[in-house]
Length: 609
Ligand code: F6R
Image (spheres, rainbow, N blue to C red):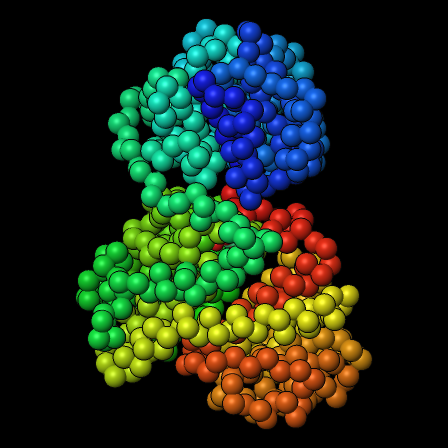
């Protein structure tokens, strides 16, 4: 899980490559490095830690040339260190490579190469590729890379440059994402579009099993067997500025505040003007296809999995189809029971999560229809699914997912209503009511954002807590899980979510004087039961922050502090209720001095299993 940038052209290579890497730091950031080819020599500079460390080194040891590659790393094989940072080289220093992914057969290759006399400098799986190139090189870099591609197994996006080939660079893609940027007398390769958007908007999206030869005056694409491939140019229309912080101190806060817009965009054009129908032609499912579905398996990871839990409730309520919500990394090895009437719903913001993709591929192999819900057009999930619903959240840069989650919920509500209407399980009148409530959500979200100062004040007071508990029933429990994950991942405060009625079966033992409990009471039908559970934690000395709908002052009698949120349909309440929890995690992390957008040990796009 790393970011790659390569450049060939007349510009200052350091600016292009390091600038591109800065846009890819969300992919991982425990070390970084660049290699540039000038005067017949490859010069490499690497530094452990953030990109700023590399920039400091580059100020002392400048690089120049017309061909360069760079890398920002998220360690898989070998600890973060200067030696393990990419680019890697062979023994002779004639080749330099950067790699995103995992070479699965690296141990056997390493043994083979060591026996042939190669000397390794790092613990990485990547370095074997550099030595393999050296071993197999026959004077023709293109032919050599075809041969090397046949020897390595696993997932990889690789870019190689060679001393003897100063006018070209070769990129290979299998499973890990990679795009080519097309310029005038210059060309680019990168793991993702933001890295090159400053220079070009015309790109090729590399498909699995493709390779490209980049020269200053053109790019040629091939299969891994060297057969030419004709690529379509994809013109990127989104704005580079939308990927910048836009005045907020952190991307996460910006993205939290973008949610009214993101929800509105995800609804746009999908609800008929008279609020009676959902338009999702991209699903590619006719009425009879929808009626034929007898089970849905939602597969996802992390926050997207939490969205799936809400999706299950919506689909089961409106469409009466049984839904399992599965953790993708477990699902693929569980030999799930599926038939030709099963539908797989893969939810993945990035569209590149290895576990989710693997589960999708396994199901596709079995002939099961796969629909992806993703935020990234052109991502692997979008390309490999039978059909895709795009969430229009816009690029999400902060590692902690916020606007992607709320837009996933919106996509799931739309799908549930679409299915309910097609199957006749959702009355037209009820559908109108749901669609009207969905239509109101952007305003609801705006009002919820007004609670930010109250949450900031709570977060400052509770920043030193060691443990926090989130409790709720039904939809509130699903949101509690997401609230606890957000708090853990960016504030590093230990947090647990519990179905409120479950506490007394063990966890209540952990509730002592002053332990903060965030109690969600957004479901009127479950209110009284939840209240009893809140009374139980209060009796053990907990400090309770309650979340409930405007008008339910009753909660104030029991809890220490209340946040009032606009009332909406209970099934849609997660969209409102999650926002104070995102803000709580954010302000707690800021109060503790954490790097909010780049929490330790995590990366935005998890492309390893
Ligand atoms: C947490 C978070 C992760 C992701 C998970 C799946 O804030 O962002 O839990 O939700 O890694 O990622 P995607 O949705 O890209 O498949």
